[in-house]
Length: 317
Image (spheres, one colour):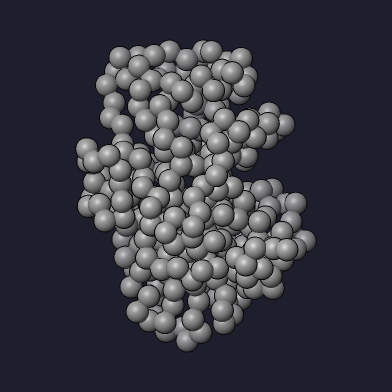
């Protein structure tokens, strides 16, 4: 028998913004398994990782819209009473965003303004889940980051993510149910190894898969939260089914970069990493206490197993 949260999605209308990207495509596949009525909206921004090939396996079971989600007339007719919007359409960059703040706003913030304005006037209640980032938090020496920790975005991308959070959370007073999920580093099958700013884990996985050298700063002792993509998907769908509201940290495995490299070495035989003494900061792990209180659940996938499945998928490409 399906769990209650899984049964919730059977026949339900769900629009996934950015549904052809890394996280979005995994959400779409899971929703199809749960027999939801899925609409995928994706602009397929060059370099972002969004590709129709990511949802090719379920293409006959979904509706697709190739457009910026800010062009609301293209997809809002699919919204139904009791439906959901899962928003993971962010163009996830940091350096690029700082260099192109206007372009970043056009992809990551202005469409959010259009959506928030539309939903202010939209009479049926909808549930909106927004994929945000842990980088909205201020630097701290605290042991854990809770949702009450001070927000101080450090770059353009993080600022636009936080500004979008505020727009969407204000809708909770207008009959809608909005939850923001602040995510750490995601990894998993379909990991992006090319394009604009693939991030630390993408760079490390690319080096390991291609048997290339990689430098780890601070002797490999920089710690990061690593969240397997299937666990991120489950967090979204569980929160959506419970109609939860507010901000939720979604924690992962808190691990040193050197440990990651050693796991990849054990799985692939790759050992071409160097430990440099260049200093670099670590960030505290995300606290999952609020998520656990709300769901009675936390991410489950052990790091070694998640990396094994990720590498298995990447080596088939």
